[in-house]
Image (cartoon, rainbow, N blue to C red; front, side, top):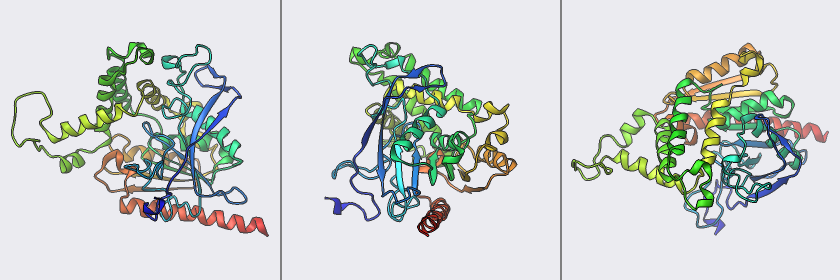
Length: 389
């Protein structure tokens, strides 16, 4: 069945689970006595372990970034467009690692995991985690894999924030950072969107203050509304207008409150689909991690001072139609990196797909992304040759 996969696919992949027994202190003041991370790898690690790439996922992502778990899967991993032979993150050259972040709901320790102190799911008792907590846990994963430094850490949206944090917290363990459709911290408007989404979940009668697992229910309505709201912010007005317009599903007004417009039907479908694969407590945690991200706060609110800790060379990419993390926010990152006298490249990609553009194979985006990653691959090959001489 593997032969039926596209030639640029990584094919069948098997997730791996790793247990860490050493306690992990968290920014919130609590400590996880131990934790598990689920992760996937693509490609092969070279002899000197210099070709490793870390992929950081966004809010609703997970460890399954590329390939297929089964031959009959309907679709591949969430970033399959970018990872594989001949793709921007070329697995003929790189060993690619992607894990599900702490607090997630797809295998890594999170609210759905069993709390060793109670024998029940953590639920709302799972500690609030930050981007810095994730980076520390990812560093432990790297240690386990024998990776002393990453050729690159790459991510879009919340994943891009993790890449930035890596450059500050572990400057000697990252050679390149690729930050796509991200921001140095959330705007007031973005925090507001996240709060509305959280309130939709918290006010659902089936939420039960986060203890819905033991009651055998799911706060479906709240989580669905949260996802619908979020999805609107990931799209652009132009993109929605082009794809859906004001088209009526039945070609006429029916004067009721069911789905009449195509966009209504689409959003409800997205909401229902999300409820089937994501946990409400995890959604609360992920949006808080977004809200709290602010690396400049540790440096008297001076982002340039934060980036003076960094040694990595950086590629920053934004999209013209992304209004949630606008190009102006990416330019703030670039300006701070320049002020810190760091090596940075920047590309602003014309698009109509909104924030979701970072997931799509837009030609100019992929040309830029591929060219940069070929540079990284060239450095890896050069370093490998030097290591042999």
